[in-house]
Image 1 (cartoon, helix red, strand yellow):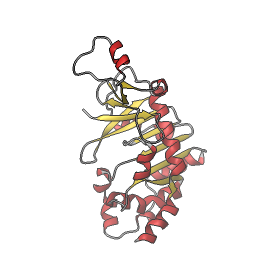
Image 2 (image 1 turned 135 degrees about the vertical axis):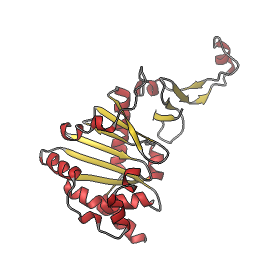
Image 3 (image 1 turned 90 degrees about the horizontal axis):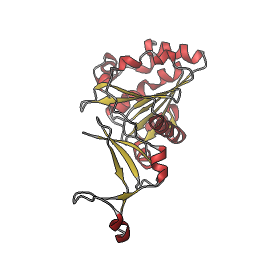
Image 4 (image 1 turned 30 degrees about the vertical axis):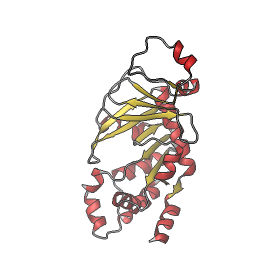
Length: 246
């Protein structure tokens, strides 16, 4: 089973940190090892394989573990939210590529040299225009590598059409995201109250999403959004920097 980063109270990337053992209700705790002999002598029922770490109370309060594991549901479960959300839909994109992109006809046109930013609106952009016209916001931060992967180049090439439809798309270098302690998984955050975390296989295919309104999960997503949004660069400006280095 894999680990999912939950949160940390360290600003410098050091411990302490909490991780969730995926598919269970177990939490892995990273912290400074307890070595004080007096403290160790007061511990009870110690087994030979056990070790002990110190973490601040604030870490447990801010990122309190949930009480039950949640299963993966089809992405279609949240499809209605892209019209039903009330004010903000935020997406963090962390992967270096997506299978849905590579399998699309749009990908083939792009590889053939087509200007995919000039293509007519599809159903996604039509919905974005409708929701933005009602005063709602679509926001997206994409983690990018240097140099850009092929998947990231594709997304950047098509981004102007999404921006024209009303999305605010920004880009953040992966190295900076790591320094900020951002999560390494994709998610949508709706109205700062519901998180839909993506689950992918090793081939970048979406297996579904895990939905949560747990206060700790929502708080972690909101903190990640705020940090990413503050440091990310708007699409047009980022595209100019990429062009200038080619």
